[in-house]
Image (cartoon, rainbow over all chains, first blue to last red; front, side, top):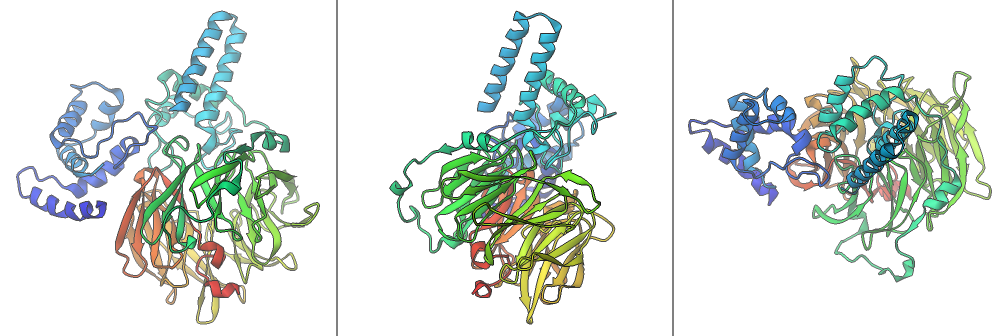
Length: 103
Length: 523
């Protein structure tokens, strides 16, 4: 099943890139691996970890939260720092990737 | 979670103690005790119970001298990317993290802590009292027990619920069972004599005896404080385990896990200095009733005969800083990697003498090694841990003990995998950048890299299924899955989720001794 989900990603990515948002799941995947996964993991969060899982979360919510953290309208020392380096495009890509990932 | 709770209880205890005794010296003492416990519960499994380093760097007054406390604090909070260091933000309080920085910057490397045969005996746990009550066949469907692949899952924090040995049916790529190990599982050994038993060693030196038929631990023992070294004798009767902390090794009864004899690891190194030594690889061989153990710092290999008194033959001057090894020629030849002089030393286990020191790349780390037969030649493959100008995988002719080729690869490598039926020798690139996501495939015939797989995570410890049809690779660190490829088409067949997977061990190894050989070689 998970293999099937992976196989679908390119198709989704392609159809998504036709609209104005132009989010890239591939770019999101690589950014997520480099920036988010250290704490939030990819698919399943460690039972020992105090961080919320991101896989399968709502795309719009993830975008909103990341932008608030980046713009410091939502306060968290560590998230303000980490999200501070992200562009709008990065945020769209990361949200597109995580929201389509099956937890 | 349990660990966090104990830590909290500890801090409540420490706080109430400081209320009771307001004298400064008592306060300092209880703080120090609390930090020592916090270090042991969170850091020691990787950084060493003696602060001397293990999988991860040494954390003591000397090694951290001059380091910025602020930088250390943020490193502990966020973890270190491209390493196994997890983020402790939210897991330890900010004040605990600040105090930990002070603690590790003030603590000298501890003297070799004691872990005696009495400590081992006292640590023996029995989970299944009467093993004769266990069913006499597996309680799951499997064609052959050799199809079992075990994965050492470290868990994100090197301990906790994610730390387990995960056993997979390598024909269906589905998980058969998980055996919790409390701290990071590191090595899985399978009994060559009885297919139902496996032994899992953790980074904190516990050994679990696992019943594969029912997928549960039946006994465990703590053989030291840190160290992955474990081997099993060809008759399945004895285990030998060795530690980094403290510097000792022990022979156990494989059936009961009771310790039979301990060994202090010390000797004269190749430069003439008497040193106390970490335990490197320990290996049993189908060739004889012996164990071979590498004394890392002493540069010696000891051969222990499995007869009354367990007498030791010491082979000296093998190399500077030995680590791992693999067998060839029906288990008679032992190839030992030596980090500091970049050689792999061939030892004849019959004469117990060095055959030859062969050139390797930089900092040879052979993992489980690989040996393949090509056009009548026995070729050994050796990986190299170090990242230098020339990153190569060494190929030696093990019949004539000559270097055949240094195959250029894209970075440092840690462990080769091969199988008699599969066309490629897989090597994991571990250089700490994007290359760490990849595994390179060397064609057995042309001895050239023909393909690079983008596995993801920190891709390491490739292993073939017992039939050679599938290649399993850990997408480790935060990758959190094992990826399965078809050995021929290299098509992705499955991904199996687990926390921070590392070493992969096929039960088929007991048949072919070293990966890449055919079971026919053993007859």
